[in-house]
Amino acid sequence: MNELWEEALKGLREKLSAENFETWLAPVQFAGIENDAVCLRIPNRFYADWISTHYLDLVLDALRAQAGTGPLKVQWIVDEGLQERVQARRSSPPPAPPPAQPQQRPPSVAPVVDAPRSSHGLNPKYTFDNFVVGPSNQLAHAAAVAAASGKGKRCNPLFIYGGVGLGKTHLVNAVGHRVLEAKQDARVLYLSAERFTNEFIWSLQNHRINEFRERYRNACDVLLMDDVQFLAGREQTQEEFFHTFNALYHADRQIVVTSDVYPQQIREMEERLVSRFQWGLVADIQAPELDTRIAILKTKAQEEGIALSDDVALFLAQVVKSNVRELEGTLLRLAVKAELMRRPIDLDFARETLRAVLPAPDHATSVEDIQRAVCEYFNIRLADLKSHRRHRAVAYPRMVAMYLCRQRLGTSYPELGDRFGGKDHTTVISAVRKIGGLVEEDAAVRNAVEAIERKLGL
Ligand code: ADP
Ligand code: MG
Image (tube, rainbow, N blue to C red; front, side):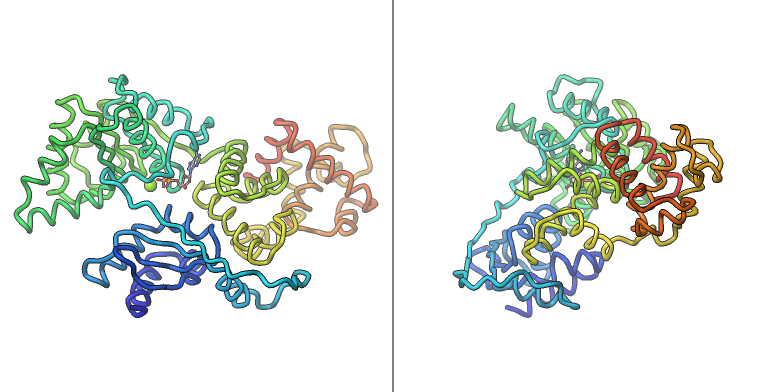
């Protein structure tokens, strides 16, 4: 049985990035199979949540592939002993150990049972309630709400596109939940284009194509098709999907499709499908702005019961920019590590942890780069930046530059004093504090800092 898990792990290792594999799956231990549930031991509760949300299908597929048929759900067992072993393995070189805790902890073995995915295929975690709306996703969100209400004729089909990890899957799942809230017996089907393809091929091979068509063309009120770009180049599946689309559309059934690019940019997609995708509404999702990133972090922290202070939220949101999945992943990893090391999640801890995890673009940037970028942005001369002039037109850019150097490069205060034309280190400290405060309170300052960071590719 253990072998089964080992083999499944091998398969999973190929599918995940090394870092995600090491963080989330390597520490998991197999603890047998009970009825139709595979029991897995995890170091703490975060693993159950994270793996369920992001890797459950992969894990179950891997297990099924090994076992032939097999378990349909996972039972999580939180094992604090495991937590200590993981910590021991990870902490080389060892971090300062927490003060000894002499009292023996009783072994806490709390099973957490995972709800099996229901027949509509929706992920229970992705609802409108926990979707943070900001300028970057406002349109897509509003369109999704309208599509879910059944009233938005103009939103049929709804085509949502955007880069990886920006919330497309979350939004389409939310549509499904909303529809079911209003009408419990609505026939909602959520699936990826990949799954559609696989089921289609399987049905052809096993002479079950009529059942397949019945399911998708007739027995469906709302079709939520994720990652349609997967159909690129798959002519026969596209043809099938074309007819599915037509059948549903003409019966006034809601269709929501997501893709990583705009309809016309999907490679090798039949023109008639591309044009149908644009019959209704095409809405994009962009990478979220700083405020939205902060709000997402706070929502996620609250959901997961993670104590996240404002300054750490700001720091994470400043460091991880492109992708919400990565943002969440970073927060969760931080929480896992803090729990393992029994440390609070403060700014020092966050910095320390992220230094190792993130590919630090900081190293490529120097104090001079930052000074130059700041001068360009504020249109002042480098000589002024390093001068002792106190006029706001120079003093403010100077403080911003000091702040960025400290925040991004971690340069010491005395050294920064030197590099800015021989200022006292206390001057640098107060500048960094001042801008740090303003970044949180004043949108104009925050925008300036962000613009300069963007310029620097930070
Ligand atoms: P995509 O399908 O676009 O690749 P996902 O929908 O899988 O992205 O989103 C990745 C992760 O980010 C999910 O855990 C999702 O819950 C979260 N997420 C993305 N956008 C938001 C948002 N606006 N509010 C809350 N969580 C979000
Ligand atoms: Mg997705």
